[in-house]
Amino acid sequence: MSEFKIERAGAAPARLGESPVWSVAEQALFYVDIAARQVLRLDAEARLTQWQLDSEPGCIALVEDGGLLVARRDGLWHLDTISGAQAQLAAPPFDPARQRFNDGKPDAAGRFWIGTIDDARAPQAGLFRWADGSFSAMAAGITTSNGLAWSPDQRTLYWSDTKAHEIYAFDFDLASGGIANRRVFASFMPRAPGQPLAEYGGRPDGAAIDAEGCLWVAMYEGGRLVRLSPAGELLDEVALPVRCPTMPTFGGADLRTLYVTSACDGRPAEELAREPWAGCVLQLRSAVPGLPPNLARA
Image 1 (cartoon, rainbow, N blue to C red):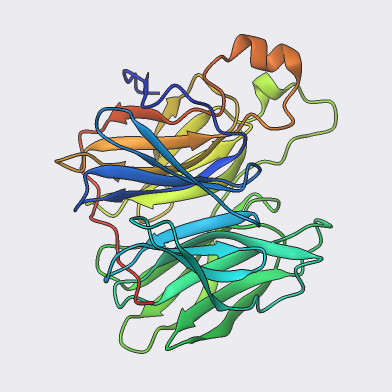
Image 2 (cartoon, rainbow, N blue to C red; image 1 turned 120 degrees about the vertical axis):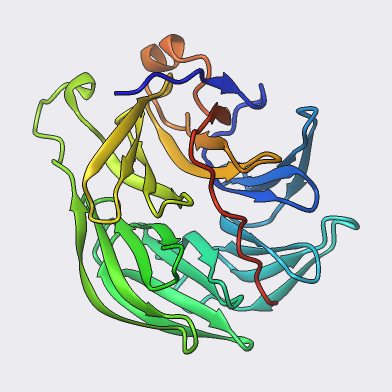
């Protein structure tokens, strides 16, 4: 386990921080607080801007023409980050009484891929692709969609089911936006009945890819990040001062700052007393840079 200097990027905790994305143009970090129904922006001086929403945001994407796409329980929306105006682009392609959008990212062609989470924790969630003004169902049969990332050569799509403790890989065709040959890329041991959290490695939540094609994964309830090779081998892990990291992303002027969102919502009081940074955005420096984020086409 490598040692890193870990700092808070911002002091204000989120209840359920998720979907961090670095704006190269603005040199600022955008992310969401799902439980508080907010989109947030953290600038280089650690100043925080917040936009309040009427429904839980699962994820966001920077848009080529400006603003953000926000995947919410009540559908896909555009947020104008200058005026604050919010406009719905599409209704949700699922029953919002049972599911909501969760993790999502655009591919290199600007198509927005968004997974869902099932409120009843049943394997009825899936993965959707937004392109040309409509949704297409791309994969199904999981409970908690997470961990979307593409290999640097754009030939592999990674996708996780957090509840199943598995990360999958698909063959990806950038030209068509098609996926095929789903297989298990990596799997982790579930928590055994009565197993102390201190002995549990966590389950795969959000992920980010680096320039060497290695996948960095936030291990929810495991208090760590893991770095996996393109073959799925564990190369390194980073111990974090929070039990529930949710998603990493690369940012900073050289794309070597690794930002990590985290959660504190619903956690035991004794745990939160030990972890004053729970819910905050953390940051650490990586020897290997990340890649600029893909931009969505609204």
